[in-house]
Image (cartoon, rainbow over all chains, first blue to last red; front, side, top):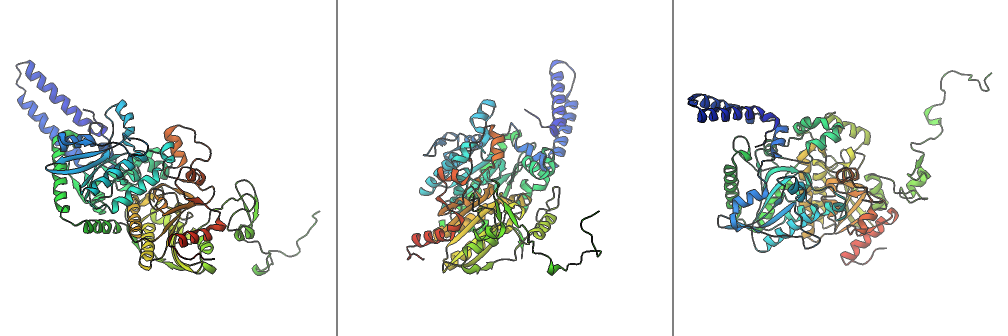
Length: 317
Length: 285
């Protein structure tokens, strides 16, 4: 387990607890009471820390190296039923954007999402979860295929942004994202979107237009990362914490602003601290949401979705 | 001894009698060509010697596109609020106020309907001078309403993009304007109403990732910068040297993302030619 800076008090207590238990095992000293004391303190410390996370700390949580990624959710939710589908039928198969069919319960879903890597090698292989235009086009191809057969779509968002590369520009990164956004506004099957990690700007929205947009508790979603925002508006990388505050990028803020529909609570200490519990919460919320949407006619579904996005924005006059 | 001697103290000439020295008498293009401001205006704000297309705003584009410069502005009163209480080195309301005072504009887009070669055309034109043409709630709402006007009146729709992207001070609210404007464009598309996207210098970020790239035709002017990520970001991320002409309109044409590039003096003619052709109407002179 890796610890973030603000989690260090937890690390310390967990180490104490471990030592205490070792002493208990290796000697005749009765440590039950001491262990209990430490456990109690540990729980209280955890509660205290995770209750009061700042926006920047949430951003750090969303990037925690132990956090479950798209494929982890897919494996947990669909088991062996998942059939990965590749390629945009144009230039290549983008490894940063994965997709395929799978069953959750007895319902088939088309699932697409950005995928990050677990170590240096796979991080590079997955391009750090930054898709190229072919990734967005692959996602659209799969969503259109789902539409053709009346299969609902789930999109899982976890990206630091669409890849700002030379070839990405040549192959029309902007156009690919724009096309996805437009087609998703009028796709005739339910779209359930879950932000499971980072939701950075157009790269996220490119697979993020949904009938319901759900956000895990320790994720962020905004128009720019706090670091880039700091570098543009403050002309320095040092103001990322202020930028994270200013951007109102947490799940709570996004819900309050009516830009997302629901927050999925995470276990104490974040999604990675109790993966099974997280998967279960995500699964239940997806199935509940699908139940709400499945009986709507395609016409109502699309017009409700369009209405929802037309409502977004605050202005006067 | 001085050659001239001031006989009377203080400046005596009244304002009306002063010699006419208008603002920006000369314009210097990036290649160093000097143009008389009046001549520049008569030449569609294109430097005659080197063809450089000077950045202009909604006022100038409306005068180029609408017959006799007659048009009705739509939703002119919409203004930004500060829903996030956003503050960086400056408070957002202060930024807005300063931009409004400097530009005499309400926000970064103006929408209008008027006759272009005798037929109605709805145009939404962005103003780069207003906080870098950034797209916040007002830009999204005005474009959506203009598109809705075009939808109801069955009038061809045109957006002139000139923007650095989404407005950071409205964060996710501005991001959602990409979806909002796309909803209206999807409705226009379903209704079979032509939508023309003119990408002008510069068109980057959120605008490129939404309406700027979604035209039935996407067109541009010579030498415009068009891209998703800005050139500096691409260079810093990849560490690669950028090829010459990277992200210019010519580059996009070559890579298949523009239908054509037009000189500004032919803009009105070509836009209307396209409309007549795609709607199978007799060609207008």
